View 1 (tube, one colour):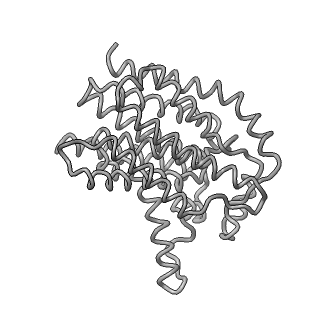
View 2 (tube, helix red, strand yellow):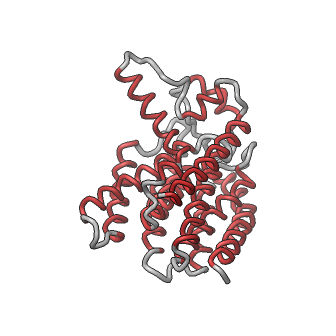
Length: 316
């Protein structure tokens, strides 16, 4: 079977697998999270009403997304070459950090989980390991390791920030993975390992949208957003598309930048804000655009940026 055909089959199996596992996992997650319902926007009054509409919806759906995505990739041959191990390492490593963060938030209603700095430092450490095992003799080892740290940690946290509306992060991750997978199929068809991982993780995200689309039955949680973001960053390093990820994952970049600019403006401009609320999707939503429309429009932007990236990559 051709690389494209194999990728399509892997995508479908992963998507169906997520649907099947999700049907069994969601009731269990609902029962497990009935004790406490942690808040997310207590420090942001404009979003308190929005949070109320989500109260009672379980999180940590990323557990079965990663489980199925990684499991199908492994069964399809995603660990038969050395390229598969950095991907599974980054996804499970950041996923474990996200899981710890999610679990800590359920200690009590006012618990906020892990701090920002510890999560960032652990993400940078995992990125350093990815850089060490993926470095080549043709690039300065130290520079590559630093670059990998920025890509893995930055991508993980950018996806985490984007995960604030039903279906938004999962859909954008699926689009980015499909684009990178298509690029590899067109230019490195023999590199089946990365193709398998792109297809399996994208399929898992697509299957998750069955439950995560508006109104969501379950959220990704930090376990899912950090794990998927780390996998995406690692795959971009392995395929040498990390620099193009600025365009391919443009939605993630803009979402992260909106938070950085908002925090900087609030701190250095006498508590003046640039946006109504950051990340950007909440700014747009508070401007009067319905949540489903925000999500779909962000998906469309993600697709358009993906096509721009493919076009520019072909012309380079």
